[in-house]
Length: 254
Image (cartoon, rainbow, N blue to C red; front, side, top):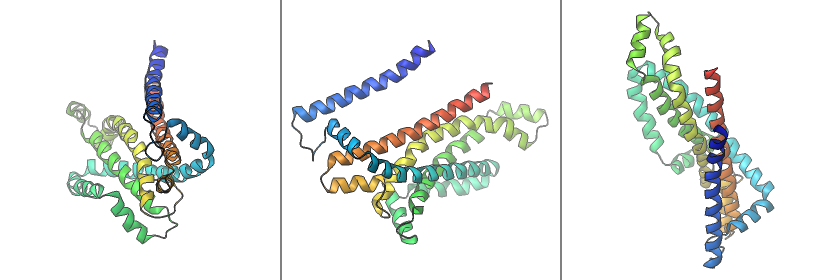
């Protein structure tokens, strides 16, 4: 039964993807849509195979920036969530500030950061990814640490448990699912932020700059090939987050 369920979970989205691409290809051919308007999936795949090495190089740059920002943002978000859950007055001070900072458009912060660092520096892009991931992780983990059942806390208090023991045995286990929920959101968001940040200056060596340069030269199929690279990168990050969650849950059940 489990095997059938897994096959079903794989076949349903795969079938949808095949149907979607078939309709896309058919629409381009039937309506004779020009390449500069909408490229056919077959042309996109052709450009993807022809430019695999270039796409890989650009994906490596954007992927590295996304990974660095994801790791740093996750660590900082977890650390700050522990601080905020311990000191409520800091929660009231820092949370509105974090929300306000996260609401600032990406292009504004990237433009400021690009002026602060050299044109060859990847710090502005990594900082933006860190900021986005930090906010997602902070909100979710802090919620998991604070929204525990009062009966569990009262039971621990009845056993004369210290705050540290309550944190370790009640709050942290309750926050773990929230953390993985945050990672499943933050992982693809880190990729999106990484290559969107490339639109606003810096080295032209990532997915974002390659997409815009190909569109500017009316090479829509090549641009979509780089978009495909970005999609695969985002899926890879999301898949890793799911694998980490699965491994963690299996470890807890043993």
